[in-house]
Every structure is written in structure tokens, then in C-alpha cells.
Length: 339
Image (cartoon, one colour):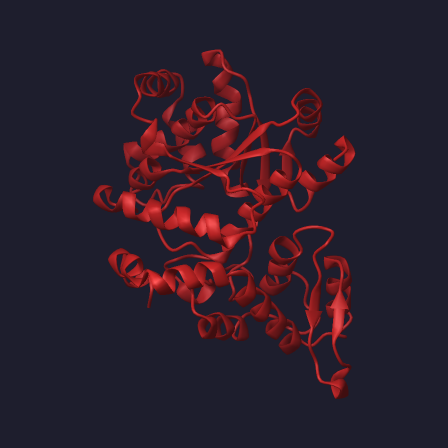
């Protein structure tokens, strides 16, 4: 794949790249650079995460080696969202979801934070960096990634450890949702003070919750999301009740699912199945074509909902099949995972 084609694929559906020039230099310099994404295993793996992991899949197609950090220690630092005794089980579950939810060319390397974050060098670097950063600066970096309801010291360590993770994993590219920007910009500013290089940062947007504008996908609000292991009938029910006014493009979660998840590459197509009396089947070979058709009122919300539901049901079948055979895993994790 030529440099221009690799760049175009990497830039698809990104909100910001810091910086594009650095990315171009990296791709010229390294035939196979290394990118990572960190996920704190704190709750059900839902379709909101698929945006970032689809981006990681695209990076893999562009010739980038991919690492997934299961940040189990981070998950416990954030108001004990993952109790220490439960962290391993949550990480096992999340790792399976990552492996099965996308058609990887080869499975990304999966690393647990607990496998290296207690190493002497890592702890030393974390403490050195924490001695350079003010509470105000650390709070600003942590606010978007931690709950911070009653701020704890551990939550301030969270973004500092995110910075050190990049060096410990020896990555060239850090991939994250835009809510992580403050945390990674902290690393961009301070890693060089420890004598380490800055990374290229790629930020993705967020998918609106299924209930529409102003609502994030949140495990505390099950109606806003779909878990990747949800049964077929639940996926269809959630999509059926999703926000999707006729012709409305802005903050439409179903169109965002199409754009960021279903149209993975130039080969992706979506077929809307309709009776002949309603126009018959229609094939879409690009997201732009789908969006324009919906915007013009030529595609009914019900048809879009049925299509998105069918696509997700098909895409997530490997995850659903695995956990239907391993229901004990979900039961051990609690009702948020299977009810």
C-alpha cells in the first residue's frame, strides 16, 4: 500500500491527529510503526467502543502493528470502577470482546497493565513525572477520563500513567477517543522532560447515545447503548427505539454507527431491504450516499433502523455465540452484563 493510501485510510473518521506532519514522517521512516489503544475494563463492552477499535482495525489495514492495553490497574484507580478482586475477570471478558467484535487480519497484541505497571522502571518514571506536574494540571487531564465525583489521589495518577504507558509499550502512535485529549497532551508535554519522545496522537469522535443529542453511551444508562454480546432480539429492540427523526443528520446515532463502524473501508456496502411497493432493495456503496439519501427523505427511519439492526446482529454474531456458550462469565460479572 502506497504512503498516500495509508495516510488516507488512517485519517478516515478521525477528529484530530497531532500532528499529521508527524504521522507522515513516521510512515516514511518506519515500514511498520506500532499503535496502541488503552481500554479500562470497568463495565460491559458496548458499541460505543467499536468506533475506536474500528479505527485500530483500519490502522492494521494500513500496515501498522496494533496493541490493545487492557488497563486493569487504571480501572481500579478510577473510583474502584473495577474492584481489585474483579479486575482480572473484567480484563478477560474485555479481551474476548476485542478479539471477536472485528474481523482482524491478525489479532492485535493484547497486554494487561498489571503485567508491567508494577515494574521498578515504570514506577520510577511515574513518580518522577508526578513530581513535575501540578495538581491543577493533573486534574485537568483526569477530568474527562475519570469520574472525579469526589476526586481521589489515584484519579490524578491515571493520566500520568497513561503517559508512561506509551513509553513502556514502546509505541509510535496513541489512539484514543477525543475525551482523552487532555490526558495525552499531558504526555506530549512532559514525556520529553524524562528524555522520551512524543507520540503521534489520533483522536476519534464519540458516538451519540441511542436516545439522541446530549446523551452519551453509558453503562449506567442501558437504554443508551448496545452491548456487543447482547442477544439478537435486544439489539433489534434497542435500535427500534433509537433516536432517528426523518431526514435528521445531526447527532443521529444510527447514521454515526453506519459511518464509523459499518463502512469500514472502500469495500463496505450496506443493503436496505424493502418491499417493491416501497421502492425495493437499495444498495449503498459509501456512507456519503447513504447520508444524502436519508437527508433528502428518500430513506425512511424504519428502513434505516431495520438495516442497522441486521448489520449489527450479523457483525456481532461471533461475540454473541461465544458468550452464549460461556454464560457463567457474564453471571460472575453481574447483572449489568446479562440482564
